[in-house]
Amino acid sequence: MSTTEQGRHLAPRDAAMPGSTRPPHPRTSPEGRRAATSSPTSGPGRAQWVVLAVLSLAQLMVVLDATIVNIALPTAQGALGFSDENRQWVVTSYALAFGSLLLLGGRLSDLLGRKPTFLVGLVGFGLASALGGAAQNFEVLIAARALQGVSGALLAPAALSLLTTTFTDPAARTKAFGIFGGVSGAGGGIGLLLGGLLTEHLSWRWCLYINVVLAVVAVVAGALLLKHERSPERPALDWAGTALAVLGLVGVVYGLANAESHGWSATATWGFLAAGLVLLAVFCWWQTRAAHPLLPLRVVLDRDRGGALIGIAVVGAGMFGIFLFLTYYMTSTLGYSPVQTGLGFLPMIAAISVAAGVVGSVLMPRVGPKPLTPTGLLLAALGMVWLTRIQVDSAYVSAILPGLLVTGLGLGFVFASAMATATLGVHASDAGVGSAMANTSQQIGGSIGTALLSAFAGSAASDWIAEHAAGAPTAADAAHAAVAGYHTAFWWSAGIFAAGAVVTLLLLRPGAPVVDPDAAPVIAH
Image 1 (cartoon, rainbow, N blue to C red):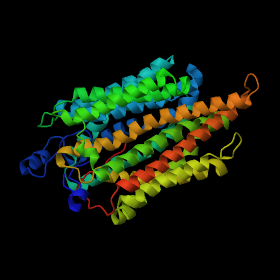
Image 2 (cartoon, one colour; image 1 turned 180 degrees about the vertical axis):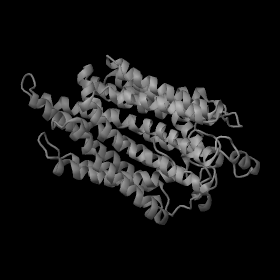
Image 3 (cartoon, rainbow, N blue to C red; image 1 turned 180 degrees about the horizontal axis):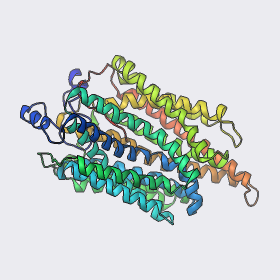
Image 4 (cartoon, one colour; image 1 turned 45 degrees about the vertical axis):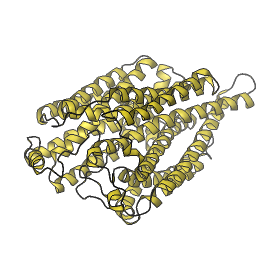
């Protein structure tokens, strides 16, 4: 990979297709470009937009699950009776499976064909959602959420690949990706509102059953409209690398989860943490030796790209934590209904959208990522500090809203600048891997961050009870202890955001990027 300024900032065409080891129509092959243009998948103009609707529906289903279950989580916990220590697994099991298998899912879509991989992912997601909706105990719910993540890892890169190969005209392609990205951006807000409405007026189970409805529609339409095509290359699968990455990440997350229930000195905590870190170290070593590595280390060792991926991972850790802890605070402590809780998060979603739009269209082309990503992380840290002011009887407007708005602005800064930087200058052969890493970083950061913050919050709540409760803790004691735990989680979140700001400031290089106008944008899942 070139180290010149021009090579560092040029984005290869189709750089945003997660999971593929090559662009759909290489620059150096006119024959390949003509073949892609005449592909039966592209079809007539109207058919292209119908395909876009199908792919957007599938994308909406994947994005919804990042937020819709958070609103239902307190009600689900009451129905199934699982502990506070275990509740974070409802979030992390999905994010961990999705993030750790996303690179493999992209490889499989190239190997098996994009349409069959897409349909298998849809069917699996629908079946897993049905299983989770019907769950009568915690174990079945967690298994269903993990299966959703596995299916999403097949579905998401295949959908993006199909979109890239369907729209070959640059103007139509830009419009299609704009619509597809808009669905991704709106999915979080839709999930919050839909989760509140379904939980309050039907059941928390419908937050999972709704995916079955969406999957059936998408499967029928996809089977009829999509054309089967397979990459002319036959990518080799790095099964050893996949196993090392998944087992290492599970070990780290499980060790952090044990810290909440067993303490940091317990063998079940540090033993799994140590094993997970060792496996991840072996994974990094193996990627330098494997003939066809799952993650070529050259993709992440570039300073700009590495800094951007760190920023994305930090944002994932903080954002997942915000949704989890503030959902419980508003629902359990302040007594908000599920709909009120969902509405309470919308100002942050709006702030993210506004900030990302301004940064992406106005600031990023002029100043580049170096001032923007660290600034966004510092704003997010300030928002977290504000949220440490919450009490058991706080008002939303004074205690919660300012923190959400400042944090949302910061996250918007990071999303717009870091997501764009994560694929700048990626070599054509690494385009799919580089794009997938942006989404992988967000999901893995979210799963590790949620487990870590849950451990800190649980320890703080237990310490508060031990110090302040005389005898059996009352309901008031439990509420104050929970708020003490939230304070600790928000302080740690602020520290993580601040540390991320320092690291990205040191890693990112100054300069405005030069972007290939035909390159497809990265879509965050």
